[in-house]
Structures are given as structure tokens and as C-alpha cells.
Length: 219
Image 1 (cartoon, rainbow, N blue to C red):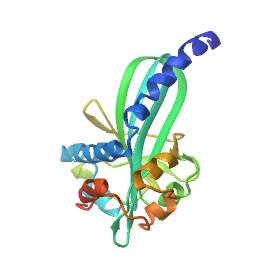
Image 2 (tube, rainbow, N blue to C red):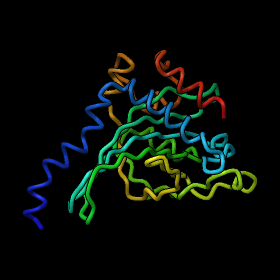
Image 3 (tube, one colour):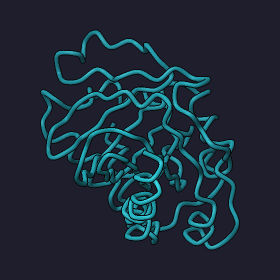
Image 4 (cartoon, helix red, strand yellow):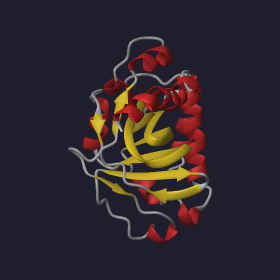
């Protein structure tokens, strides 16, 4: 098994970092986030309930590539935004990755939306250190569809959703590590910036972020 891991690991790392390479420009991640939010709302019966979106204190949006054969790996990039007193904050760049062992083959691209239900959840992303979902703050599969609209009550600090190959579903992301991409934030904002200032609304969003803010402002 160790020999197999040594053989496949370089290829897996390359494949899983393809998303980061393709989305090296943070504007692409922002545009991708707009598309993901729009796709998650296309089928009301299987979408994130509007009440969940309206009550959200923040939203993290990721596009993750998973590849593997016996040894598997995943890597992805995205953005996180927070609701402020004056509207949605600018986006802060985030990324995730990991390696595992299992009998699976091929490449799969999955879109994730993580609803931040509490100020503490937003604060976790504001600190800039690695965040392990479910470690200190509870993360649960979020309610789905119109039928959940009337009875939605916050059951966890974060709700997780996924969309893969056109199928919407709740998914557990406990144990997933998400990190701030400081270099991408600096490039996007044209200066060194901290995620805490971005998510607090203290940093003016670039014009390229406006469409994302407009889409989120519908909720």
C-alpha cells in the first residue's frame, strides 16, 4: 500500500491542484461563486430554503475537484463573504485539500455551499487560520427544499450543501480543512488585507465582486 501511495501521490496532488491552477485568478472564483449560487436556486424543491439564506450570517462557496484510484485526493478554491450592517462584505479567498485511501476511480467536481449561521462561524473564517469544520463549531447537513421553509430552525453553526453532476444534496463536511488564501486576497484587492477586515466590511470590494453581492442581496 505504501508503494502505491508513493506511486500515485504525485499524480493525485497534481490533479487536485488543477482547480487552484485554473482558478489562479480570484475573479474566476468570484464568478464561479455567482454561478454556483444561481445553480443552487434553479430547482426550488431541492434548493437551499430562502429562509436559510436570508438568516445566514455568512456564506462560503467552493468548487472542489476529487481524483483518485485506490489513493484519492481533493483540492479546491472558493470565497467566503459575510453579512454586515450595510450589506454583504467583499469576498475573501479560501481553499481546501486532502488525501485519503479508498476504492474509487476517476475525477469528480463538486460545488459546495456552506451557510454560516452564527457570528462565531463567521469569526472562525475571519481569523485567517485553518478551519476544521465540525471541530469547534457544529456543522450539519442543511435542510433542503420548499417543504423545509416553514419549519427551519438553526440546528448547527454551519449548514453544508453540495451539488455534483447536476444533483443537489446535503453532505457532511466534518473534518474538512479550509484555509485563507492570503496571496490571492492581496492580488485581488491590490494591497495586503486581512480576512477579518474584509468580512467586517472594512475593505471596499473590487468592482468585479458586485455581481456576487447583487446575487446574495436577493436574500
